[in-house]
Length: 207
Image 1 (cartoon, rainbow, N blue to C red):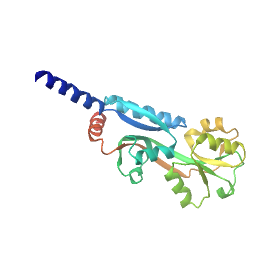
Image 2: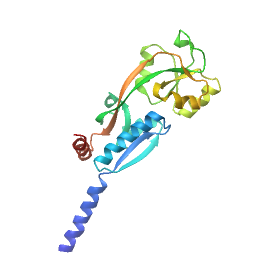
Image 3: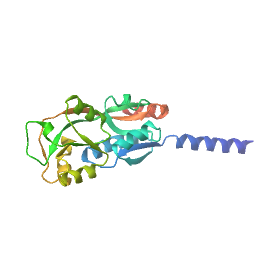
Image 4: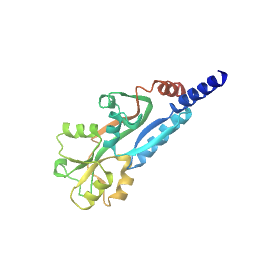
């Protein structure tokens, strides 16, 4: 009987430890802004002594994985994302404030709609902003594909975070900012609301 209880306690202890692991969706295009957010989020989990497994997706796929419940957390997304992935909630302090503008290889013009614009799919708040400003655009799920399309002159420009300019210029020679800031978002880390024990540990370590 004693041996059985010891085995049972061992199994329960192992299950408790395994439950501490978080599957985190991050973004495969790996811009400097993403890496800075990743460093902050990983430091938060490390402080709370929670193991993290990172899986890399396009931004569009990361949201789909979260909606389907195949990941426990999303690296960072604008405030209000809980309305899009309704079973997730923000946790911790804001990771960053990001400003977005139009960047193009063509000269700066007065009318943004004169540019043929392609936007990284999976940024619904950016898309909503452009739609509200009546700016026409197409989307593509891969940052590398967007760079290729602009380099091939099939599109004139794209909407990117201003802090990522130097990184983007390395992918698209001659790229420059041709609009003022079009949108600004506070970026937060999101976690599945069902992960109550992990949320408690994170909140306790943040305080």
